[in-house]
Each structure stands twice: as C-alpha cells, then as structure tokens.
Length: 80
Image 1 (cartoon, rainbow, N blue to C red):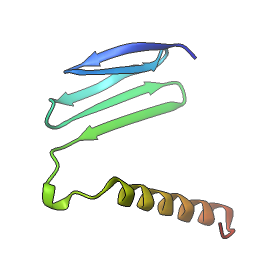
Image 2 (cartoon, rainbow, N blue to C red):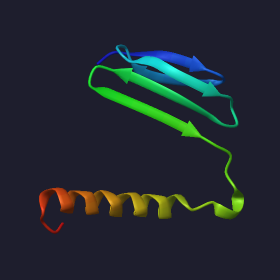
Image 3 (tube, rainbow, N blue to C red):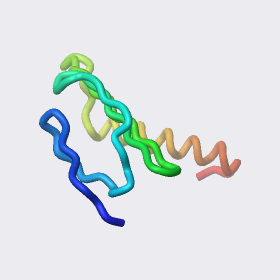
Image 4 (cartoon, one colour):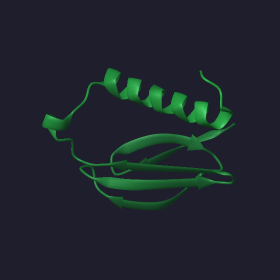
C-alpha cells in the first residue's frame, strides 16, 4: 500500500494514497477530521482535556481491552 502526506492546521499525517479528507472543522484546540476510502472510514475528534478528568494511558488501554474482549465474547458466544 502506498502512502502520501497530508498536512492540516499544523498536523502532518501519512494516509493511504486512495484515502480522501471528506470533512474538517475546528482548529488546534478542538476539531474534527473525517477520512474515507472504499470500504473504510476514519473519524478523528479532539477537544481540550480537563486535567481533573484525565486518566492514565494504562487505564484507558485496560478499558479498551476489556471492551474488545466483551464484544468478542458476545459475538462469538464463547468466553475469552
């Protein structure tokens, strides 16, 4: 797969050659980007972080893994 560079508002990304930026809004503080290609969609949103609500990366990763495991167990109807 070939990639190309896309820069937007101070961000530099490498995206697949066939992917297109189809929606954008906001700025460095808060915004939204939407990328599309055949059979694939990526949406990215960012907002300011409230330091009082910040979580460690380990907690976020653990929660993500638990949610994936739960979804897989529901889909496969087997305990993982």
